[in-house]
Image (cartoon, rainbow, N blue to C red; front, side):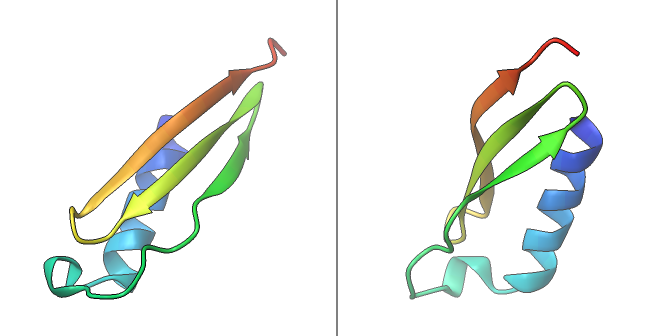
Length: 60
């Protein structure tokens, strides 16, 4: 999960280069499926943050 979250942060940095100057709405969050479960995230561009808002562990 950590590797996928790191990839997500790098992608958000590349797409939203001028984060603090962003004046539009934040992009829609999403789900990332990883072995054994998934996590849900939300990107807040002006704060320059990617938040993990839910982790689901399926135990496999």
